[in-house]
Image (cartoon, rainbow, N blue to C red):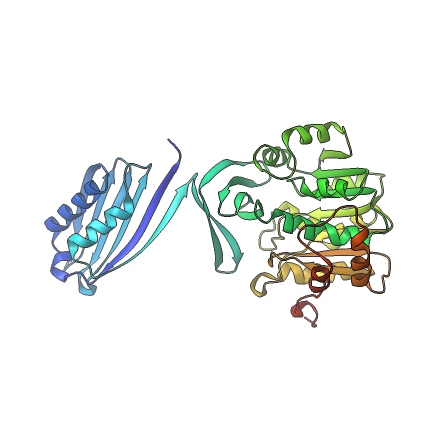
Length: 397
């Protein structure tokens, strides 16, 4: 048995007042509806209010159901929650509404437990609901809650309920993050990746000519779960080789801040790929890797002309705070900053270098034909379009 169930919340309207105050009739209607929907009623209790109104509670083998009536309004609140697949809570609400003669029914169904849905926070008072048809792996790693499951976008990675990548669009995301930086850098030989647990960026960097990629991630359990379950990025065999340092990719399970303090290597490109900044949650350990101090530390390991690229948030008006802050921070640290807004719409990326590049857009579009890696999801026109920062970032705050 999986820890999973379905919770149906409903309001019945247009029910005769006398029906909503008739305890024997309501008890019979609720029992029949639950039994007809496949549930097993263990006990049913009711309380009569004065001067009118009823509350009924049914204890089920599958969980519970309740009805709270408002005769003066001709309405009732109904709540049916069942675990497993034997009972159908939606069917129970339908049967009860028919028995009571309801004229209108408003309902919502909430999958709960190991399968069902993920509610991704998009902004204040706004969530996006992902239907998850199958959970492939889930757990708390010590750093974050991770879920890998099948959605309409294919196999999808969620960290703390935020979608990090999906089979259908992961290449759009990862090319948008890495390719502009590769094109802005004078050379691509040594690359450092901080975060990006899937391993796609490491593979793209090698395809673009990097002889060594150091991949630093604090969450070993997440990286290994991605290699086992995601159909993109590292395979288990490739990850095992990278953990041994056998080949161009070297995986280090460490805190990115600490790694930068200890390394004596210099990199042509540094990539910082983290979940979105969460200023509302001071305990989110990755927030510190968005600040100016971290950008300065990361830029200190760059070669002459090297480029730092980072996930910088979202341009959408109601969730653009991270992007607004990131543009200011990059502008404080780097002489040249190049923006790329991806075709996925939600994600913006910034690439910065201490070199003063007179026309960075012309530079990257001119170098595109020479890049050993051939991008699939962007071209010169996309680079020109994506370089335009949202209006909100170009006006004084």
